[in-house]
Length: 313
Image 1 (cartoon, one colour):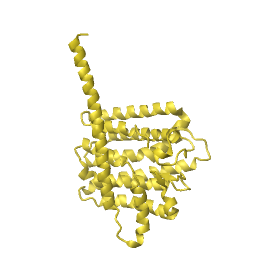
Image 2: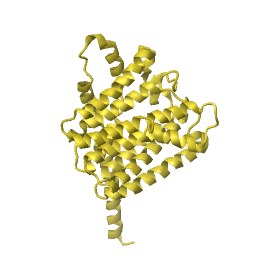
Image 3: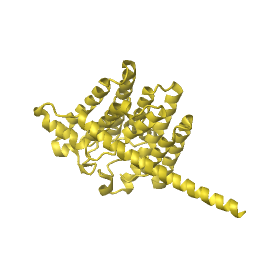
Image 4: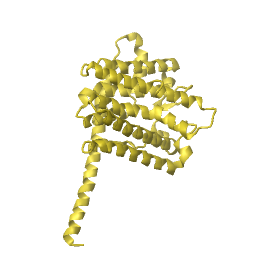
């Protein structure tokens, strides 16, 4: 090889590696800024206006501000950018998504659900405030999430109707509630791959899909674009859940901040550790294939998706 060709290739490789590192730094900055911004907005949305409810609000804030990574809001903003819809118009939706996610965590940890004792590095909500207060905190957060979107003055009424319908479906019988029900009622029967896929799709992937679909709706996406976003988001959700299953087996409480090995059966049970890792790769490949529909606009979302799956918590 000619020395000039070799030098050019060497310089090019250095540039590519530097660009990758720089973009990773940019994504990390995006994550930190979004987390700070959403934390501030969540405080504004959940303010005490009645002293008689101070304990209930304390319970809500206890889990809502316990160090969550705000992944769904970040995801929402990144999808919005592909449609030139930036965070000011998506802030209320992003907060609603985080409220729904936090509400589900409080509910999941209850003794008659998943019986978790640790969440985000702290005692589960019901162990601090009692099961009755924890249930009401979860319900209060869910209701507040819908209020925040309905009262959003930046969105036209027809758009709000579509977004709220998406969120309701995500939480309800066809979404997280249905997934949790199936998860609880199959305890006495052998777990199968179809059942596991159903639970993962409804308990985890559904909220990822909403975090992608709702900002796409606000951005005026076509039916084809929304289908692509839903395919992308659901595969990211699957990959995220399988990565979580791997952490459940290989992680430590100190790093994950939550109770481990509570699942009766998960992806590692069926595929083993290496097999589960391959499943993560498969779903990421499917996700990135769907994102090709947004060639030229998807760099941040691609980088973000990779970063979300390289985690220890």
